[in-house]
Amino acid sequence: MTHPSDKRAYFFKIDTTIKKIRNALQKQFNDAGFDLTVDQWVLIDHLYRNPGISQNMLAEMTTKDAPTVTRIIDLLSQKGLTERRMAEDDRRKFSVYLTEAGEAKYSEVLPVVSAIRRKGWGDLSDDDYQHFVRIMDQIYQNFSE
Image 1 (tube, one colour):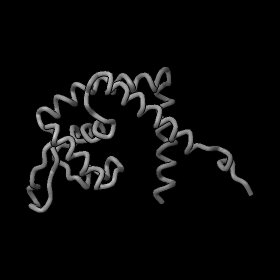
Image 2 (tube, one colour):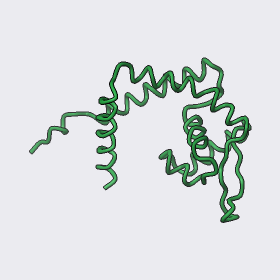
Image 3 (cartoon, helix red, strand yellow):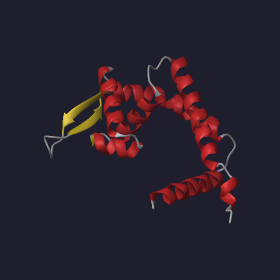
Image 4 (cartoon, one colour):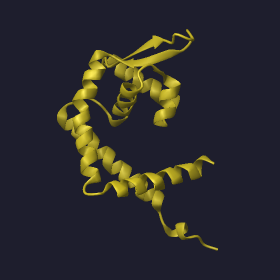
C-alpha cells in the first residue's frame, strides 16, 4: 500500500531551499567583505544570544557535531571574535563568549542576514509562518521519536 508522501519529495524540496538560502547569504557576506562563512555566522548568532554556553551545548543547539564546532570556534578565535573561558563550575570545561570584536561583527552582519530573511519570506503572511513552523516542527518531531 502506498502512502501519499511516497511520491512527495519533501526532503529534496527542503534541502534545495536551504542550499539556495545559504548560497544567497554567503554571496552577501562575500560581497560585503565580512570574511565569514554561513556556519561561522550561525555560531556567532547563537553565542550572541547565549553568552558563555559550552561547546557541547553550542553543538547541540546548532545541530553540528562537536569537532565541527571546535574547528569553527578555533577559526573565530583566530579572527579575534570568540574566546574560551574556563567554566566556573567545572575547570575541565570551557564556556564560549563573543569578544567585543565578535559583538561588533554580529551588529555589522545582522542587517544583511535580516535582509535575506525578508527577501526569502517575501509576501508570506504571519499565518503562513505559523503553518510553516507547525509543519517543520512536526517533521522534526517525526524523526525524533
